[in-house]
Image 1 (tube, rainbow, N blue to C red):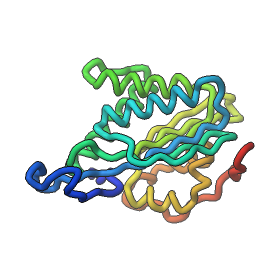
Image 2 (cartoon, rainbow, N blue to C red):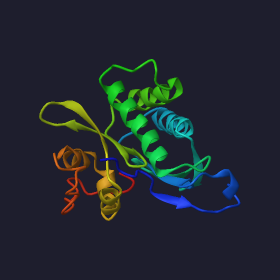
Image 3 (tube, rainbow, N blue to C red):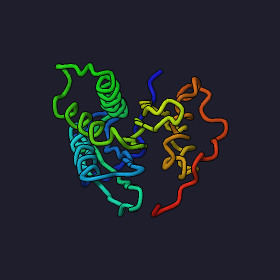
Amino acid sequence: MAHDQSVSSDSDSGAATATQQRPGERLHTIPVGVYLAAPVGDEVQIVEEALNTICDRLGFEMLTDNAPIIGSWIHRWLCRSKEAVTSHEVTKRLRQLEEALQLQILGKPQSEMDAALLKGVAEVLKATEQDDLVIHVGLVFAVRWLNPKTKQRQTIIKSLTPEQFSKLQQSDSLLQDPEAMFQLLKQSDFGGASGIAELPRPIRPFQPGL
């Protein structure tokens, strides 16, 4: 069952006139969020430039930009579609991102996919390969954490439903806890019709500036 991956819409006719829109089309906004546990060197710059490229290739542009929180690195912003599109089209574009992330992790990028999108995905994953992270574009999440038992970093890519994302936002610190997010997204029913019955507590409570 396809999920509507758009988060909100902008019906301002000044941005796109009704005569230019087909039935069901409107401007959509998607949230973008980055948490990097311990960025080094130019990691932050590479990740944010790559995410801007990814959003651009998906047909979105920055709408609002919140000041980042420094210590670890937390940055959030909103992107809006460049033109009026249907919810189905937004879902289709975000699925392309999810597929690109999955294929890149497996080392099997497809030549028929958008080259700039694949490049942006590759740059994000390469720049953060030694860091724990929670990154999302719309409802598509990429989470990586260092498993202390195996001493290896594990990555999971998953799309949420709008209902799950809304509930997840009630526990903001989870978005800053890669281990807790990884375990949450690993649940077999997470992403299914059952949604989130109860959010877990963060494993490592967030402390700004540390």
